[in-house]
Length: 173
Image (cartoon, one colour):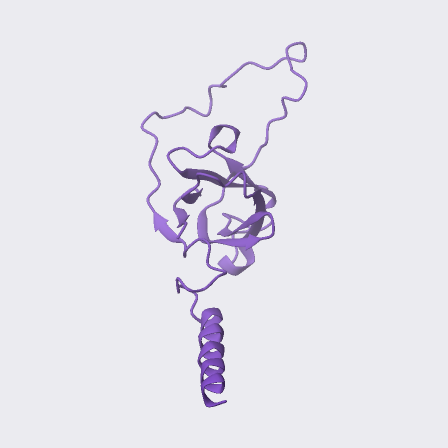
């Protein structure tokens, strides 16, 4: 009886500590680690915004060629990957340049959302209206989530989210 009670007490303490220690390798809910900041590479080729990239005409417009007018969000604050049945949910918290940002998307930078050298990269973008005040950072926060199946995440070791001024990545444990 004493041995059973002792084993039960030790195992219950060990299991309750899994939920409290977020970075523990024993935690079964810890699929990816904590987010870490990384540098954003600057483009060496300067693009002149006054010169159009392609010519548009009502006669040459292709069906399904909708252009998303979103721009990268100013700062990526946090990235979390939560394991759910059938895959994972990638949750991103960012801060926009101005208040009133809408239609937020995680736009894949990789072709067909396939990992490149084990890294799956997304760009956090939002449509940001002009004429709105900047306001405090708390009022400009943006939350977005994206579901990826387990098949989509095969071969993925790192998930990287890129913003305008920084990037954050989460690595698989």
